[in-house]
Structures are given as C-alpha cells and as structure tokens.
Length: 278
Ligand code: A3P
Image 1 (cartoon, rainbow, N blue to C red):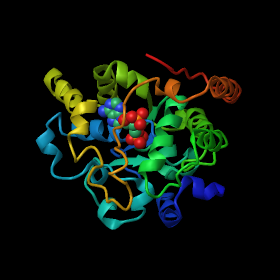
Image 2: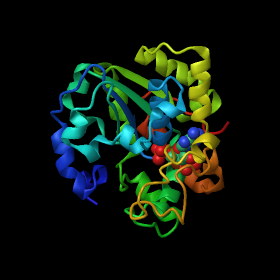
Image 3: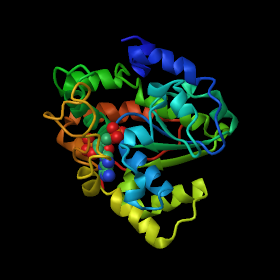
C-alpha cells in the first residue's frame, strides 16, 4: 500500500483533492479521528447537541448522512450548499485538511483513544469491513499497524501532526477514555467549545441517547443500514465492545513491551497521556 492509499481509498483521491480548497464557514464543525477511536460516537453526540438532546429532531437521516465524511463527499454540491451548521467528519491527516481549517475557520474536535485498544478494535474491524483485507492473524495485523501499513496510515503520525498544529486551528482535544469515564463532562466541554447553551435536561438526553446500549439499538446511529457490500453485518457490528483495556485480551507480553517502547520513543515530545485500563 503506498502512502496516498493509506489515507484514502482509490475512489477518494479525487474527493481529497476537491476538499483542499473548500470554503470553510466559521460555523462548520469537523470531527477528526484516527479510525476506531470513537468516530461514530462523536457523530451521534454532535447530532444530538445540535438537536438539543431530542432524538426525534435528528430526523430520519443516518449519522453517516447527517455527519458525512469529507473524503467521501468531496465537492458534492448538495453538501456544499447545506445550511449551517454543517457537521463533518474525517480520518484524514492534518496535511490533507481543507486549508481554511488551518486559518482558524470552523471548529475541529479531535477524539483520541489509547492506541493499544485502537489496534484491537481495528483488527476486528478488518473482518467486518468488506473493503479491508482480512489479516492473517493478530500478529500480522500488529506488525502492519506498527509500521503504519494500514488504512489511515500511522496512528503516531496522525496524532503527532494534529497535536503539533493544534494552535493553528480552533481545536478541542478529547479522549475516548474520558468519554467512557464521564460522558456528561465531555458533552459539556463540547457544548462550551461549540458555544451551545443546553439545559441540564437537554445534556442528560444527549448523554442518554449516546450511551453504548442506546446506540447499539438505534440503527440510525450504529451504521447497521450501511450496505452489506461495505460492512459485512453477518460478521460483526460497529459497536463491538466499547471498553477500555480490551488490548489485554489480545496482546502478548512481548507485543505489549514492544509497543510501550515504540510509544515512548514516538511520543517523547508529545505531552499526551492515555488511560490504558480503567
Ligand atoms: P470497539 O471495537 O473496541 O468496541 P470508530 O467509530 O472510530 O470506528 O470507533 C469504533 C469503536 O468505538 C468501537 O470500539 C465501538 O464499540 C466504540 N464505540 C462507538 N460508540 C460507542 C459508545 N457509545 N460507547 C462506547 N464505545 C463506543
């Protein structure tokens, strides 16, 4: 897989080119994640905040339509003309973002997750996502991930670039583990960042409808309606386990030690801390 393909699937190269010069509005809200870090969760939260916690006001649209991937919609007029606030999502690396975002237009919310759990979630996702090659075994995937030879490229490169350039954007950084531990506080931080004034009851509703079990049973929120040609629903589900520390059920001691060594070296200049277990 060459570098470009690791960020984009072949049919997305044109779209990525189109979005570079997108006219970003100040009201635009971009969720950014490395794959398997809680993207679908952030989509649901953003929709619910806009709807002030009212599930029925989220209309009949699936999350993937309401908060589309910029690398998928590219320059599609329908989306460009959408009234504000436009909610958008991306896995793209910092270097491929629309230029306007790097000039403090719009708002960026970055969700990070401890990379050992990302790796495990991603491993299982390769069985579920039809467009991804099934790894031979866990060790095979471990090596590819550590080498950045996976869709989304290197976890380390992704987070380091966003962290380094965070002051160039209107930027909010949150972690998956914080969301697991205290979702309400995170929702409130997002509301403050977006300057959304929700009542306590509205916040309660946002939290309730974005809990793991609520989303698991809400087909508009859990990607169940995505075509079988993209996701093999017989083999898996987007909301798989939703926990912190599942890596312990997959990593060998040797893999974990190797991972810690690489992490220490790669992240030595990046003061970000992760919960590996809760
Ligand atoms: P697991 O595979 O570890 O269960 P993404 O949307 O970026 O692909 O991330 C998917 C991961 O986020 C999956 O992790 C999924 O279960 C988890 N997730 C999604 N919604 C969640 C929620 N409401 N609560 C907890 N975890 C959630």
